[in-house]
Length: 119
Ligand SMILES: [Cu+2]
Image 1: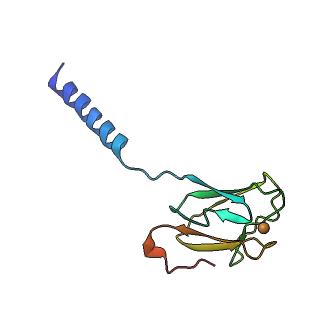
Image 2 (image 1 turned 45 degrees about the horizontal axis):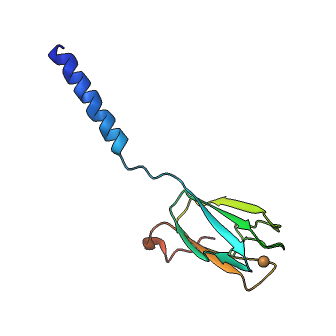
């Protein structure tokens, strides 16, 4: 193999390895169950860009309602689910608008952002 072509093949392999090994943050869907009148886990830490899917296992309706009003699932019947993607860092508190004792929070990003509350 001519030197030039061999170098080209080596460089191609190196580039391929570099690209292939680059740590890329992939968006993940994080499940939260609604069961026994509680969100589980009640506090969930995710990365920016991840989504959360709440699924209601109780035989009666619950909602997933933002503390600050930026989303509201509406009533979720048994087996109903609601998904939201979080594109900004911060603390996102939520509750069930039917049962006032049910609360949860999504912490998006690193602890650097803990003081932020998104509205
Ligand atoms: Cu509820």
